[in-house]
Image (cartoon, rainbow, N blue to C red; front, side, top):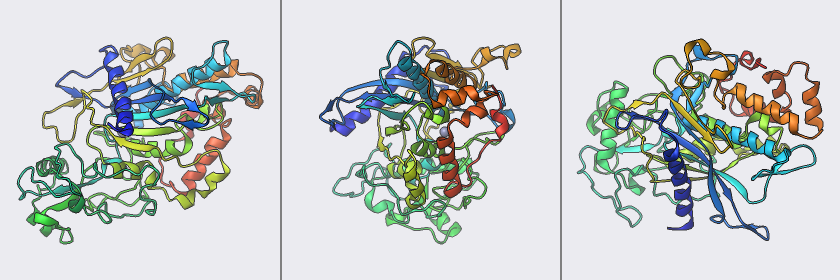
Length: 498
Ligand SMILES: [Zn+2]
């Protein structure tokens, strides 16, 4: 193992192990249900004369989230008590924010924090050598799930393609997996957002990638069924889509499919067989059965967090710099190129110039795949009818009640109907409870501008407190104005709770 593989394995295995350790309550039924897992791992690096060692130091899981559900727009509540979006990535990030609040509180209490130092202005700063890594067991929904696949029904199974001197064929290998990952080079930097460049345009799949034929044919069948289109063979595909590019052995190119819909104002998917089925780089809402969700896809949220930080608006007032992820490790079927595009590459860097005047920037985390498999992983190839597990499990490293489970309703699992809507039905990571933690932190931080601004607020509503995070919300609104204009924003009514 080289050091990067070693690092990637550590991140994924620590999260998988932590999940195993958690009690069964809310976990899927083996063989019947699936879920997705995400987590945040803290790395403490030993600092030698300002030169940090990437694979050095200690690794520790600080937050875990699992879940697959997202409520429709009509189910959203203005009281902040429920979780609207329970995809694993979102639950893990909210659990991480809970962890950060706890650590910030510890910094100012008599106890001390393992990750923060005090600054004189009432803010905390991360201790030297502390960094965070994000793990997810599946490709985050939305843009990252759109990547080239090759479909070829005439080529024998497991036929090997000569690829850069290697002939490895791996059943679960997505198209781009073997690409050398250049960590310093922003992917697709020249592709502006909203441009409907076909995935394969600059990237002839067959020439450079090992692809297992059966794998993608199966996937096509499944995806085709989903979209009620005929199962394509190369001839039929050519008829339906005369411009389709045919590769060696009559293989043709396609893209992995998603049910996540482009937002209004974005380029819209063409839904034609071939590499133009989806457009790439677009903002999308979360896929889901039933009522449409008003929540942005996880790919889009991660893109946002790579700019505004993963700590959120209120925590941004308590820390000196945004908290970014140093790396993102993705399990299951994943494509490095698509992940990079979705997480940062689709941003036009020139249009983000204004960020130079803020403490934010477009952060480019190292993006890695892991082969470690999550026990409840479901790939789009799975033929057995696994049902999504409706519960969302969250855990973070705090002294008590670190673990809890949310039901599909967004309330704490086990809440009886008559208690729904009372604070006790609300999970620790709900907006209401995280806001409560913010107010608790206000009690313990020393006198500073933030504290007096907070005390001066006549109504200490969530919305009014968000005004304390001026730089955060102004920056985010500038980003939306300049590059992410179609981002779905909920009405301010949802922020009026106290
Ligand atoms: Zn998602």
